[in-house]
Length: 445
Image 1: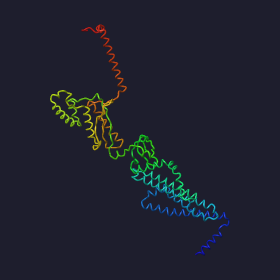
Image 2: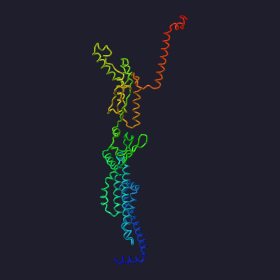
Image 3: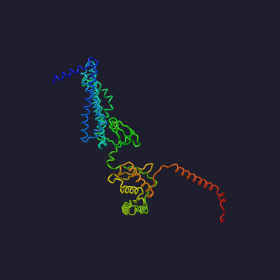
Image 4: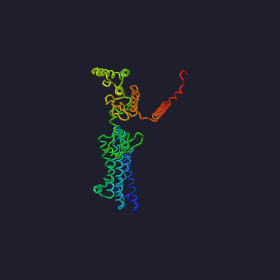
């Protein structure tokens, strides 16, 4: 067998050119052919095997994502660089350039490998985004920080290969630049801590409705990245908020409201204080025909009658008697209306309260929760409730307070003008009664 190899080498040597430059070209050509052949073998065997394994194991989504992110191709590109790095020393007459070419090829192989790993991380993000868990928690920040770590390791390794020094020597040299690196990557470090805290403590999810007035953000969270969080506002604009701001500053998250299944209504009706009065017995009897007030008025009138009966003769003075008020009856009616409304949560807080009177009237606040949290339906339910309450006010002798408008001021001015004219005519007639008597028609005419 050794004799056969020696004979084969002798025969090949007869075909080899004797010029150094020709031998170099032949060697380079053979090295390139070997590199391409090894690349083809790896592509056909190793990468094809990985593709088949993913498909057979039911991870077609991973295989599709790896192909889309070109992870297979980048591993494939690393093979010829590695072959050139190993075989460049076998090329004749390239001793001076062999070291430089070998280092460049070695660095290129590692760059392709790290780019391929970055593609694997991107494929992980793609497959995770297709799951239901991604609707609540995002791993985009972790993917981005992993890519930054890969980039840093790749940079140190490639530089150490190019300058032919140990990677530990490069890392030790970074210690002197730590202060500069901290200053340059300050936002990245803050965002990393904030993104980790937001995700691990479940403080923010994709799809949450947040309100952050200091950043003009009011809408749904569309994306959570390492450095920024994108919020789509209600006017379809997008506000980009730094991630660390959502950790260091306060904002309102409406997720719990949606999860609870009840959305709060807290709105006031301002009643004109001049329309508040006691109800007469006839009005109370008329209002008892209202289904929502019948039980309330029946019990109240009985209690009031018993209380007034115990007073004896003092009850003859109206100021001493207990009497129903129209605003109190309105609060009872509004509460009864809410309790019979199927679109209002009956297991959550519900009340109709009168607040401190102001110059704008007497505020009567309606506080309850709707059974539907969707914005459009919530506004419809709220509108239906207050439409009815506003329309029922005249039935109880109440008026809604309203600032005087231009029409009101004009009507008031005309009324004052007509009153002034009549007063002037009356004064003139009082000063000249004889003229008025002469102008008057004779009796019997």
